[in-house]
Image (cartoon, rainbow, N blue to C red; front, top):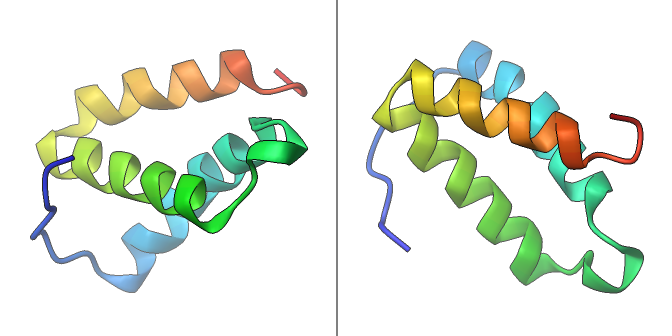
Length: 69
């Protein structure tokens, strides 16, 4: 995974918390471990740094795989 070097302000991080929480909740209980949670956070931050379009695609994916979808 690429290292994300973008700096985000607290407001941006607050907004990114929702997709992170949704993705973490979508994991089966057996996969809810620190390594997977870190991977999800990195993926969200990388896509956000790459641009809003990629974040929108990621958010749509997370919504669709979420049990609450």
